[in-house]
Length: 154
View 1: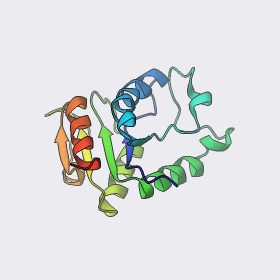
View 2 (view 1 turned 90 degrees about the vertical axis):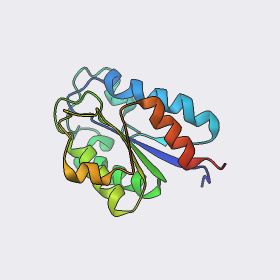
View 3 (view 1 turned 135 degrees about the vertical axis):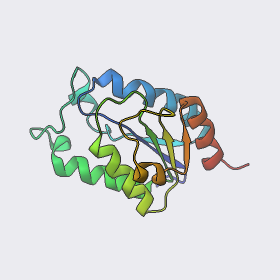
View 4 (view 1 turned 90 degrees about the horizontal axis):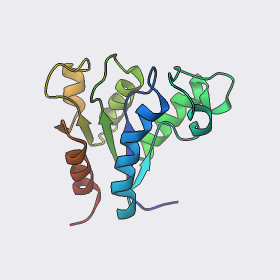
């Protein structure tokens, strides 16, 4: 088992294209994995199934990794073993129930949450979402800085 620090990359998936949900995650990975930080995505195991999707569905019951229980349990398992949760809500146009669940689990488990969200007018603005965030920023670059600060020594 790895002793590397672990970061979970949370954010909306349903209704978006594969490119929409992977570009920002790849940016985070490219910045942090060379430093020894493992980045986990809720898309793990679904890449082949979703790669050509222009509108990702809530679940894919025909796929072992895409069932309701597989999606939920893998997410919870990954959050249990991560050290920090990074939530990207920039530009969201509909509430992401999965992301809200992930924030709640992280809060319950007392895991630090880096929330990336507009300064105002995001559909996820809610007292409980705000309270679940350890840090709040409107910049992915600042989120990367915060992740480094939390997960790397010195």
